[in-house]
Image 1: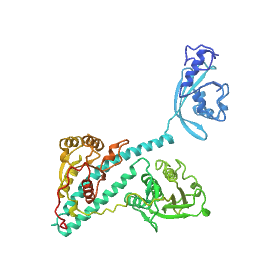
Image 2: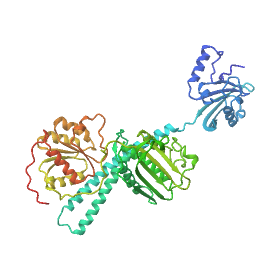
Image 3: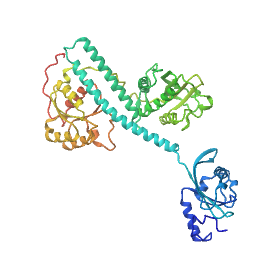
Image 4: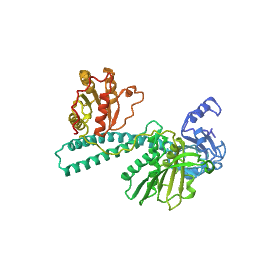
Amino acid sequence: MKDPLLPEDRLPHDETPPGTAAALSREHWCNLMADAIVCLDEHRRIHFFNQAAGKMFESEFPLTLGKPAEHHPQLHGLLEELHLQAFAGAGTHRALRHAKLQHTGVARPVEVSVTVSGAPGERVFTLVIREVQRPGPDQHKLYLAQKQQVIGALAGGVAHDFNNLLTAIICRLELALADERLHEETRIWLTQALDSARRGGELNTKLLSFSRHAETKPIPVNVARLAEEAAFILRRTIDRRIQVQFQPPVDEAWPVLADEDQFRQMLMNLCLNARDAMPDGGELTLRCANRHLEEALVHPPQRAGDFVQITVADTGCGIPPELLTRLLEPYFTTKEFGKGAGLGLTIANHVVVEHGGWMEVDSQPGQGSQFHIFLPRARSATTGPGKLSGRHSGLGGSRLLDGRETILLVDDEHPFRSVMRAMLAFRGYTVLEAVDGAEAVQRYRDAHSQIDLILLDLQMPRMNGWDTLDKILEINPAARVLLLSGGQTDPPPGRASADQANGIISKPFDTVVMLRTLREILDKPGPGNRRSPDPLPPESGK
């Protein structure tokens, strides 16, 4: 019988004996193939296998030349499924799809191509086996990350457009409320509409913060404020049958050193996990408390010291004791396929540990669950920005907010420009307009000696706000620029000119805050102040 290392009808001109350079070359090329190759005779003895096959069938019973396939349970099981002896004479090719390869108790789908060569009694079976690729945990995680990135980008674009619309609505309502001839009932209706628009802007801003994936920036923050914001969002976004409550600390919460975006994401993961445990409704409660832990009473992973405890409690189905120890394992989930990737609690725990804290879980089946987060107290009294109140002062405020300067307004949204022009003109400013960055640069180049300040939107076509800022500073390094944004406000990496702007205001903004910021920039001495404003008449109480 000829060398059965490989069937001669697969290599018709190969008459080289084993061990020669040609045979070694042939074996070398087979080992370069990603598919597994196994050759057997009619008695199922193994005459050849490449490295891919050795890796595929790796177990306590490795493939061995000359040994029957029955000595290897995985290969034997695959051959039984293929009914190898049923294949007829030479040249028969059968392509089988979705056979099963048992590996460590798990059935893996494979595709098998079988080639038969040789005469009866000397037949050789060549199996080419390819595992059907399915996205594993790493690929699935990458897919989710890419999906979140796309959603975040879309959310940013929608938020920008929505904030522009809200800003136009808010400013027009304020202009209407400044009319002293309004009927009182009409004034009440407009005031209520203005409050609703501002709450919409507040919700939009908070939702946008959850879609960001920015660089970690730990600062002293009041986590009670962030927990209250999370409750605010949940009340408006999840099933209304779930009652969302926030219980503030008895005393003012201690600050903790945290990245606000990561903390929000962690807290939202826990809250959404609690939501999923209550498909028919229930109560979701967020609590905050200052805790001092004594050395004699702590057990790992607990530590002694001052901590802020954040609790997410639900009245859902609870967790069986045997599953509590596995909750934080990556990709472990009790949800139906497609309802969860098993990463929410893992990510939440990772964020907590990265912030120097730990997580504890209390749960009983049928009695709900409580997730307790402990974060160390920061020894700094300075915290992040305070809670948004949604209140407004209107346009009829102090005349000290009026001005006589010239402002270049740069924004691609016509409704926003028109209402800003009306609002600034109402206060006495002269307003020039540009529909995008390219036009703004040209207008500033032609008349920069007459322009006292530039209101510059960041998200624009043709030339965005950051590139426009660079061009304007090339013309006049002392130019006064106040940036506006309806979405992301972080400058691109390495953008040194961002530090030369005079500030940034997010849309929708409080009109009085905007006017006060303008006056602070314009009244500040410096080379960018083209001229001192004309004296204003004494305030008349308007």
